Image (tube, rainbow, N blue to C red; front, side, top):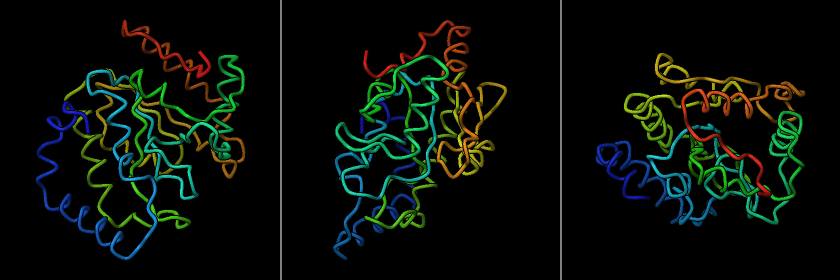
Length: 220
């Protein structure tokens, strides 16, 4: 993890729950579990988005559980991997909202480098077993991340997509930050996400805050 995030979160690493996370992770490895994302990418969201660059926080639930998909960024898949259904709907909304051409690459690293924290609540998963690491303690850690960002930063834009993400509202000081809520982009939400216009709305807020807007177009 980047040094700025290490310093920001140093107290969390000393807490008993974080020791339990490590114990659960090591035990899963000893039991020969195949875990996604690869160990080097578990904290990828923090490595690609420096603490001082954060403008937008996009919350996901847990990593993709199919081979080669998870890369430590919520909703993102590596270049060359077929787009999951939720990501296809995200790109459809980008096209509808901002006229951005549909992209064949689902790698959202460019967003992360501009200050979009692509944070899953649960940072690891066992192959083919969605939410299998929901009892590891990761949510204690990521809830602390959200709370500390809310407390110590100002003017962040939180994108809360779906019921799970919306449960994190209680961690965010809405007097200091902005919430944009929508249905989950999954097709299971029956199109409820489409038409939310969160990408243009986020940029409008950033411009009002005299911050550089996000270049959402991944092809540029």
